[in-house]
Length: 567
Image (cartoon, rainbow, N blue to C red):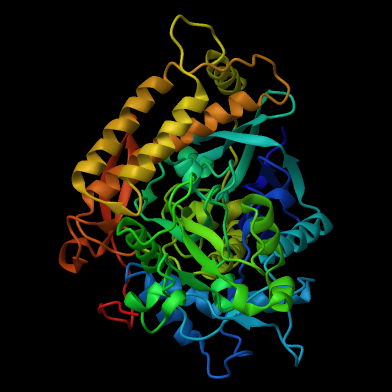
């Protein structure tokens, strides 16, 4: 295949914004987006609540500086402050650019972009499109990429980076429609493949495909990962499925209620109540359940999210998708009765280590969005900052790659490399006396992570999680793909996704065990305090002999000194 200047891996918000911006920066470039699914089905479409920006439409006294402080405080002071400054200062420009290219933002009575309150924010600054914000942004960006002439390779699964020393030559991917491995030589590669929280399986709000493919491929190629132990549990997932109920439901005035009829958040965050930061609200819900104040059901214990007092008109106009999901998956109409909820693994703060331009330590490789860790979220992400991050840093990575791509040579990916990868994939299909089934391994991985490396963690439990993951990796070596066909071999794709999740689960558990403190989403019951002297630093992970080797990296400070985080 003819070399591309830039190959973007992932067709969600970060990948599409990167491709759009790269084409805008240099229209002469040859740019391709490689996506496991069709881009307008990417997981960005599941982002409901909105994107933060200090526009000052709802609160006239809001400022970028307030947004920066809320982000750093929300991160439990682990965010890199230069990255947080970039995120928040670029936010108003991004929202207005999206408005100019056709994103249908909800409006206030004066026709300015509407903004709603979100957790951990000092002002209502979350810009939204009802409760379908990610979906509408994704369609807008996809239209623009098609208009600008970006090439799309849809239904391709990324397998590996092709490298030469410390430089990328491009990548190998499988055409899912034919089963053939194809080479994509490229001057620059941008990973924008989303997060890895689906490793928690039934306790996750993520789509099945959020298996950390980009992080795993980069990790195995020698690119370090950062802060992998920080996995955010969203406070409100539907009781049975874990599907997301947007923070916008609480931003519009929803109440969290225990089995005594109490708005229990008054005991945990008396000032912010239901709009405390996500890590705090999730721990509070789990604590109420563990102390016997939850509701019982065959699907497990849960809490109530009560919207009934908001009225039918508001729910139908601002939360229509939440109503539809509640009725379909729980048999509950939120106009009439509370929604049953429980915390669900939702977002990965960790990812591929990058600088503020999306560059990784490997020449020619960039990353953006949830796949990356530029560290704007630190130990805990604020609601409304994830959509913003994929847009801001997708744009920045696309611009940087477009300006720098011609300084890299694509190199040549040999036919032998392609053939070796095809043989490796075929190995999974060979019959053997003893074999393991993908489904059993996947379920057990989700279960051990939820129990042992979940919201509350302590040494003996994490040790059990580490041992379980190691045993699952050993059993994975005997996994069998029973579908031996080439065309749309979804069984093979699922096995490859599980391989990625197992490698990343090792880093999550190893980091959780090493970090002997409680900070943001990482709560150690045996080390309940934040320990700035020993642990105000990023954890780093490199892949050596099939295992993660831990290192560290300093946090970039700025004008904000460390202080206690209270709400």
